[in-house]
Image (tube, rainbow, N blue to C red; front, side, top):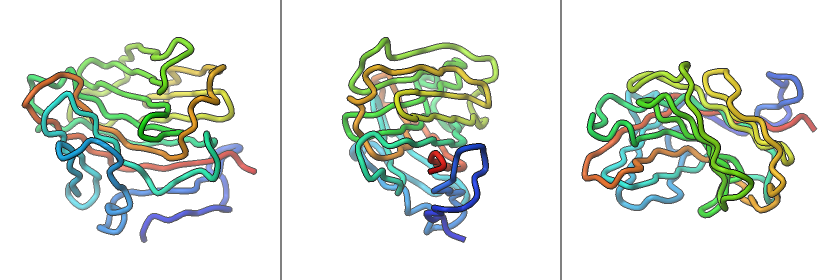
Length: 214
């Protein structure tokens, strides 16, 4: 069964309705995720026919891929959740600088983004354009290391931004400048912060998007 818009189905959590789910179990599901930015250094691959993979060939490089979900107005209310892993095939010399991320209200130059650095057990929430004290950063012992999954959850409902990692809430904040973040899409991100010729591999085992119950 391919991933599809499922507007109007029963909510899986109080007040939320799922509108998109993708487990990457077929080529059709894999093809639904398209590159937004990052250039030739960013390549997607279908790992073991059940994961969406991103090959980041050299840094500093940020590879942004978009899901099919797009709001019908700027700054829509979305919650995204994804299972993310930095693969062990990533060079050990750059693992501290490699992260996987999810984004909401995103575009090429706008958005909120939750990043996880598995090697450092570190999380970060960024806003573009930057304001209101962003980015917020911290460490969390529950963050799993390289080669293991981490569950990222990021929501923007009105002007409240909430982020969770492996079920632990790491941020809940009212952003007074939320109106500046006018993107409409939901994204998956893999990146190397450090300038290097080494390569990284990041995989997403699943992604889902929910909206508030109308």
